[in-house]
Image 1 (tube, rainbow, N blue to C red):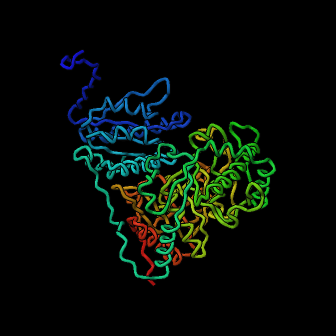
Image 2 (image 1 turned 120 degrees about the horizontal axis):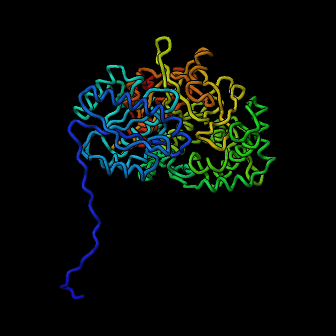
Length: 553
């Protein structure tokens, strides 16, 4: 062939983008990767879609489901990233799009399509305790915020409230829903106080000496919002040690039964109890506990190997098919008082008298927060035990809005009424945890807290921080709330100071909130000030939420 001859290649076919009928919006749901969770949550998803359809059609618009439910699967969720891409190929790119969430969903199933969709996007969730729809919504919203994708958001208990219906009308007509953010204020100039000085010095130490967070496999359960790129993390003085969960599993094989049993004996001596049975498929067993105790020892030894300052275990993809849950391990690591573990040669007790901050589900926003919190609270002479919680649900109780904050087990025992004596191990539910394992179940003690969330927005790190109280509710009400959600998980009855339900929902950029106790209200205000000063010194934009006020005396 000469240089002047024409070359002919097989060019890829270009698909023709579909067009939407006038006044038509499209609906999609993102699902779990675990069919054992998709199937039982499907009726709740159907009810939410009915509510949303009715609200849209009341405006004179039509709502079109983007794909039909799968009769063989028994549900109509998007169950993989590939399926999400295929569904989006059929959606008119300019059409208004509603992502309806009544379950835990893996955001990466739909993020590729949402990133390039040109029409307005609405995320909407039910406000039902049974399945974590609003948890999935906040996770998706955090991911959209991180990627810089504009979206509107709303939620409803039963679809009858005017606030929800007016929001749907606003979305289909304008592509937007306005929310009240009057509770948010920028961090003012801070006068020099002991707390401000402490915060800045802790930040300076971190910048100078640096820290390492261990990541046992990045990106849990589609939580794109929980990954902070190195280019944002390293300027804080924090670096990642990327580890494989297979290494954790291998290290667990080297832990002897005697070492594992010593962990169990310590917990029982401390007063913790376990609901045990013999059916591996549905009950908590001694075998499951022994593997969890081995994971606890293994996690500490690997963290020692790499000189980690905090550690995160993904677990819920990968290890869930191999061994019992990591949650018992996580809660113990976050507690100052915990079973001692020695180095392999027996010469040292690892992190003796200290917590090793663990960030559940490798949520790196939690990692940074927990690391700073641990150092600040320790310096202030307060218990540094910290945890994340799912923002699970809530209702008013005697004139106050009381949130149900739960997480699958990583709450440290010092957060619970009675400490270890108030902690009871229940088997994790088979829908999410086929290999079982114990939770650290209990009710969080009443007290003053600082809550916060570190997140990515506009290619920069931001921190929302506020004050709250964990309150004690009557036993009957506590039982009702636990049984309405996941009774095997620890619960915190949280009242946020100066932040309404809807303000929090509209603003929060993650499925998780970070909680840490202070000794009293004055100490909590001072600790919040130190924390805000530390993050500000690190270059993070700090937002005060609700009645959060820096201590100035």
